[in-house]
Image (cartoon, rainbow, N blue to C red; front, side):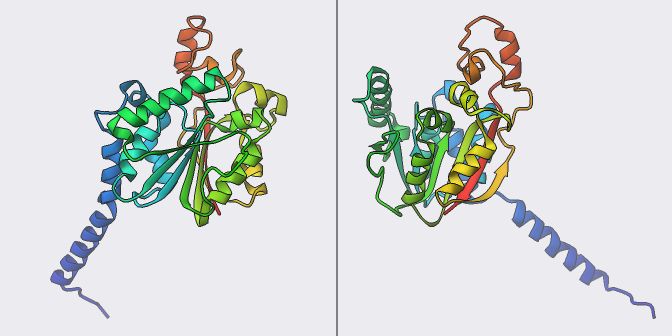
Amino acid sequence: MTIISHPLKISASLSILILSLTASSAPTSEDILLKKAIESPLRNQDYAVRDSARHPYETLQFFRITPSMDVLELAAGGGWYTEILAPYLKDSGTLTVSHYNPEAGEYFKRSRDTYDQKVSSNPLFQGVSVVTGEVPPTKAYVAPASKDLVLTFRNLHNWLARDAMDAVMLEAFNALRPGGYFGVVEHRAPEDASLEYMQTSGYVSQALAIAAATSVGFTLVDSAEINANPRDTKDHPKGVWTLPPSFRLKDENRERYQEIGESDRMTLLFIK
């Protein structure tokens, strides 16, 4: 039996398929809002030029962020990610960041004072709540089960060097509501790296990071190669700080390290 399809039916089916594909690929309002925050002319341009190395859009999408979330950024440093997170969350969500105790020493005081000044004067930081995050924690950074997403960017090595990585991860776990996410970006050590190497080089193995997170109750959801850099040999004389943007060796072999680029990094997502 020969079946003849009516051309109008075929045309209608194709139209529905095309519309469906178009709708699924169209950017959402959340995507547009995130791109707007990343592309803001108010961002520090020294930060913005590093987008090609740090991939904020892809990274935050991978961490399943939405603008209505209550977010905690651990150890916010100079505020590279805060400049993006704060305007993105301003209208519908909240952003809390943990930062150094200014009484812990001159370096910590200077860094905290600089950050606090940004919060008070930079319009991008409007609505950001800053809390002191001791490492290791001496008290809860935030109320238990008050956050939907906890983020940390390139901080595990600092916690590991102070024998506090598990303790800070437990603080992240306690801060999250059930079903909340923990997003981690960290300089990635070779899997056979020694603990001594990791405590001094700025690199942490992916296996150790996952083991620490799961030991406090997290479940690994996914890992991504968004921030990978296969050119990074991870054997630099001043550790990860040999590479850009630190250039710890200053002009010595600078072209070589510039060609390597920023460090190879793991990108991990956990759930409570």
